[in-house]
Image 1 (cartoon, rainbow, N blue to C red):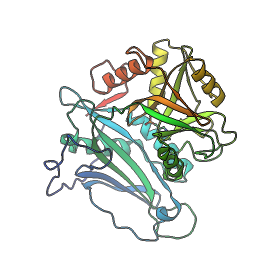
Image 2 (cartoon, rainbow, N blue to C red):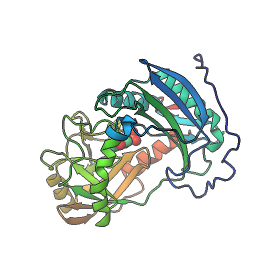
Image 3 (cartoon, helix red, strand yellow):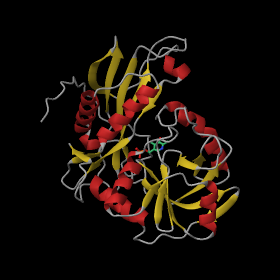
Image 4 (tube, rainbow, N blue to C red):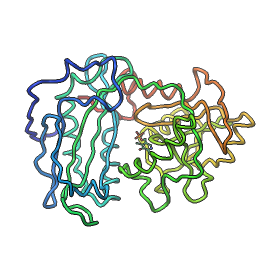
Length: 355
Ligand SMILES: *Cc1c(COP(=O)(O)O)cnc(C)c1O
């Protein structure tokens, strides 16, 4: 074992565990008893600690409130049959957090602080990891500016916090999506590849319009021509057309580099499934929907792992996707990922850390 970072731990007086209804968890509503906190000042992270989850005091001049220097991550911890807690690819989340930090002029967080903060917090909150099938403990690391200064510049001080939330089985119903060709999520040179707060604030209005029209989510297209499919609200998307998987490349800086996406690509490779990272045009998508060569469409992301898409609106027209068989790629890859995450299948790629 590596040396452990000595973290002062202040425990809650009264745990909220007993009064928490684990059979009725709404995603993101229930936060566990404790949180990990670190402060950045004078060019270094300091004062790492675990303390009771509680409100922060905030100066109204706090820079984040005005200019949005704020980034986050999302991953999950799962309970296996022996009661051990398994975390899926947290090192990838750590790397991505630092990529977001770099783009937003925020300090990087050292691997040891991230991993020790995360694992010691999970260890303390073990009882909060749900036992129900498909349930998990959602982990939310985030960082934001804390300078009290109303001037546009990178903050000199930051807070890094990790919260954990028990969440239920997210196996959502298949979703219906609308290809968005008016509003833009990200453009080249922008911040689309960073998991930063403003991206989500900017997407609320177009998403609400789509929801009013009866769709669950949007399929974003590129900001320049609105002719190429990029991704969905908090998921990357994949299509299977004429037996080949297609997903957008993530080297344009406009698409979030999903860890679920990367894991699905790895498994497709392991299984010799044809897969190409290329942009699918809206016209190609519509043609494949019309001629019946579109076999599957699904989102990939931490929340749902795989979200089947059952209806797609393209240029104002609704198309219903064919029903998926049990051995459809999206079903097989979901079963494989779930098996790995819950410790029931061999973790060949060393994706899991055990606590
Ligand atoms: C977080 C996120 C994803 C999915 O990333 P995962 O690491 O697979 O959870 C995809 N797109 C956007 C915009 C996201 O915020």
